Image 1: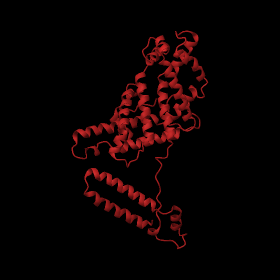
Image 2 (image 1 turned 90 degrees about the vertical axis):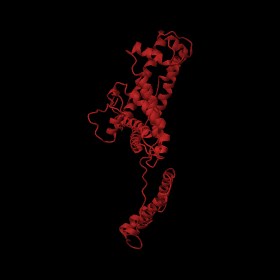
Image 3 (image 1 turned 180 degrees about the vertical axis):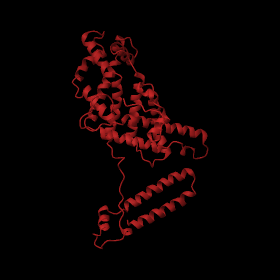
Image 4 (image 1 turned 135 degrees about the horizontal axis):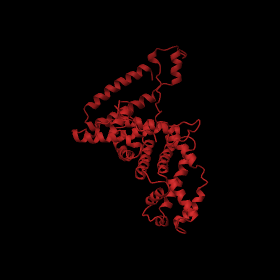
Length: 367
């Protein structure tokens, strides 16, 4: 499509669309406008010229000599950077985040203590399902990825921990800041939407929230890209192995003979009792458990959701409502952790995330 023809079609199309949309009611206007935009994009893309041919015409190498600028084909360059991700890697990252939080809660240390107590005869279990599980646990001890590999993966993907950075690997330095920013943006969007439902009136109430979904989409896209580029290598295999191991550990802790040995009603009481006896106390179990659950869901959400700015508010709200609730729960739990106590609040953090001054509020450091 020649440059002049392309500009003429776009100009006339916009004028035609404005005239057609003027007489429609608000509910139909948004739907028809999106259809017009998609149709225009399809027409211009299908009729775009060849990039190589356009360059030849531009430098005067075509058979008919150098044409004017208006007669040169305009190549349509596809903007696909934001969608160029590997979903499998992001799914593995979501599971690895869950494992990381449980690791910080002491899951692997607790089960190691139980295994040693079982072998040394310091725990009154002998032939129940828990004893059987502890016996079979030795088959898991020669794991391909042990604590050192897990810590290296946490540092590489989340920048969590104090271990050395893997030499030559890409370390996701800003993960925690981006995660907090995404959680606050999701929470703020739906808080503002709730306010708008109270003080606004009119037929387009649900289509005009105070919050801007573009902020959520941009922060989510940036976080998704950073996770994708830092999760190459063994992350998928490590997350799968660690998740399978963790599931087995939780089943052992929930075995009736193990709970009876500690006079506990559930696996969390066993967990807490072991930490109190052998590690100086249990800390942040409730908060970390919720952060693991909510964080995993939100990371899955940004991996599977097309964060496209062409998405309508109604579509975004339908897909993000559960994610926003999980984000609020994550923030509530995070504020009760040691590093989250300096969290300045949703509004101040969101101002920082979009580059506005936050006065004297300080961002909590990474874990």
